[in-house]
Image (tube, rainbow over all chains, first blue to last red; front, top):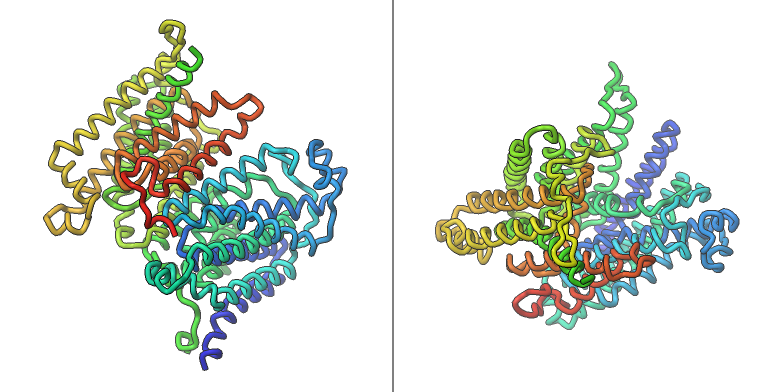
Length: 334
Length: 293
């Protein structure tokens, strides 16, 4: 019975992601892109959730793993001549590396995971605000280095002509795969121990739990997933700049997670899709939204203001998120 | 002489950051809230200055202080539901407010920004011995020292200051003893606004082009400074703000010209180092062991 009752906890987010993927294929061309973008954002937010949701520690640093994964996947799928024309000082090993789509995604995950582990070894000892600011420092440093060190990437220039392989199939399957891994982790011994220790650190330590090690496991896994999401991201846009994967994205993904509900996978998925949905609805409205009886057109530029108002209102009046941080259960469905 | 020049500039930048940091620290003390939207106070003040360029100086300054004060009081009202939520939700909500205000500024004034020209005379340099110091440097240090002292005196010597310190130490007990939370929090926002408006005027001399993200970019290092200094006390938070401004200015002068683009990397590596050695803050009273696992 316990096994059965946990099934909706995974099925609900997976089905929601699949529904977005299927529904999206029926939309017009520009709206299709919005749907794929929403799926990639959901992937980033789920990756973030694996650490923040289970450990209770805020991280601004995950977007740096997205950035590294994105540049890794982008740089290995662009022709050598183009790379060298962008950045003649590129390390030869990066300039000559060229792999297929799937391998580039695997590489993105590996880069994200390895970097998260290296960063996590010293930082996972910190808690609370110190940890938040330390991960913020990681974000700033990664951005600063990527932007200025032209031996490892295009620097401040745009890396373009990346194959646009993140169609509906790749976006949907990628998001679902990450959701399944996140669920498997939170149901595992590791996930349960970490969650328990975030609720009562003293009791967990008393029971012999090494919180540091548990956090490091979650941080590394979540870094790998974020790196993978970065790979999906670059293959969706076909290009990437360091500014796209910096402060704005870091805060937006964190806001999505909190708006959905930090403590549940369901919350991560709902938050990401809800905010993305509102955003693309507003984008469409700026061009004229047909509501059957007539068209609603909102003035250009009001999208960001409206999005800000919506996010602030949800956070102020639903501080635990729209899902309340709970998973979907059978009793709540029936 | 070169060392002295660097020191004077570093002290001036540190002082301005200390003003911003003290405002963030005041609000954090009474509300346990890190206000990411503090930068939008500076942006609002800067736009008030830019829009009143052509008017007399006194009018410009009055407009700046009035706008910043009004926005701070509005923030206090908006943040009221946050008093009972988790730190993560608080943090993200203040960010959402910052995002919203930047979007409003973008809509109203466009992305290219406007230039402020209210105190051009402060950009002139004055020779002291072998040093050539801009007036704004000296004024920043003087004004900053006065404001920090006055704020410290208000906290130490006045009734409301005592109530604020009591709330910062233990908000529940303070309320049981008759301290009104809303009064104290509102006063913290007022003080923070005065400090922010002053910092805005001083900063507008050396950074006269105000864009929607003007204040946000300035507040990020100050916020980091507050945490690095130590949030538990106002003194350590303010000192942290000073330290990060000071360190940024010194690093800017010390790094070789080829490495100057990596200033942020050097600065934030320093931040991580400090946090690892003293997670409770550089100037915190004691090593806070519970901050580590």
